[in-house]
Amino acid sequence: MFNLAWGCTFVIVNFVLFLLSYRLFGRKGLYAWVGIATILANIQVIKTIEIFGIVLTLGNSIYASIYMTTDLLNEKYGAKAAKQAVWFGFFTLFASTIIMQMVLVFIPQESDISQEALKQIFGLAPQIALGSVCAYLVSQFLDVYVFSALKRRFPARGQFWLRINGSTGLSQFVDSLVFCSIAFYGVFPIDVWWQILLTTYVLKFVISLAGTPVLYIARSFPIREEDKPAAD
Image (cartoon, rainbow, N blue to C red):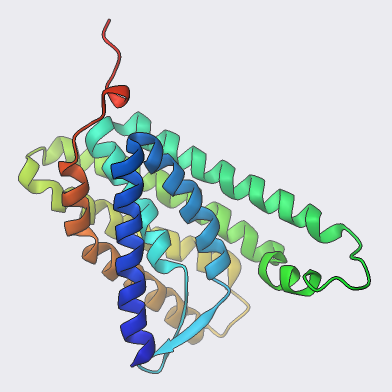
């Protein structure tokens, strides 16, 4: 029960920090949050926990907040701003992976205490790293496209929840499918593979559903003057 209670607190803290990043820094804060969330999600994912007898990986809550961020950008600033955030997150993930792989190559001094820990955190197998990058790009751009399509079909302010959860529900399933197919297919028996795929997707989508009221709060924040389009 501790992991469940602490997990709920953890999700709430993620949502509060997401709101603070936008409230304090405006549109720049959303781009910063994408960078933060992309890096932290890929660090947290190596830690496993158990809730109700189901083994889960961390990183799902903050990764789900990336979809929340691009949806908010799409809603308030347009699809171009959302796509820019996706590329920003990809560059953050790519650059941090390259740099940390180079860090691991340095020969540590005899009294060094960090090399093995860094290997555990950043020494991802190429198969997992490839799965993470591919899943991120495919699912995030799909989310932007689907959200934009739903925005044209259901443009009313009261239909914001439909745009959020419709785009996220599809794109997060594709994310889980692409990642598990590349990173884990052939590694685990097919029944275990399906369990990982479904539990990962369900958890991320439930967190995204819980974030719907958070996005309504964020949408109510006024657009800063510096974030408004320049007059012709």
